[in-house]
Image (cartoon, rainbow, N blue to C red; front, side, top):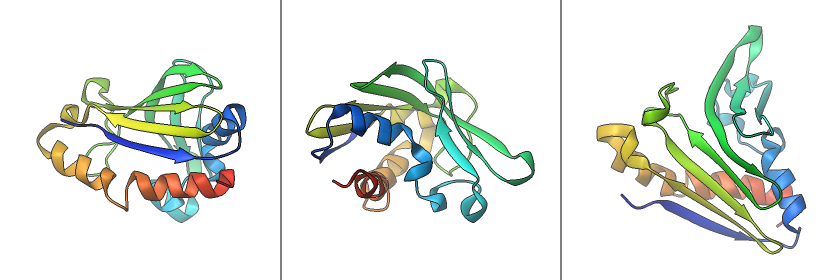
Length: 147
C-alpha cells in the first residue's frame, strides 16, 4: 500500500524546524486528540523509546505512539498507534509509522505501513491523505513555524 507523503518548504533551518515539530503542544490541532477542548498536553518524549502521548483532565493519559528514531535535527520516526476508527491501538504490530525528515529548507513527512491497520487500511490511508488529514495537520505546523 502506498505511503502518504508531504513536503513543506520553510526558511527556519533544520534545528528550529525539528524543535518546533517536536513541540506538539504548540501546534497540534486539539480537535485531532481524544481530549478535544479539554486537552491539557500533547507531546513526544524526546528520546528513542519515548512515548507519543496526550494528557487530559482527571489524570487521563493516552499513549498513541512510540519514538523509534530521535535524531535531532535531521530525523524523527514514531509509530502511529491510532486505529482507523480513531481508537488507541496498543499493539505495535498493528501500528503504521511516521517518519519526518528535516533540512535547512524543507520538512518531509512520510506515513507508511497502513496495511498493518487491517481491513479498513485503505480508507484510513485515504482519510489521512485527504485535505482533512496530514495536509491540515501540517498546515497547523507550518503556521507555528512561520512557513
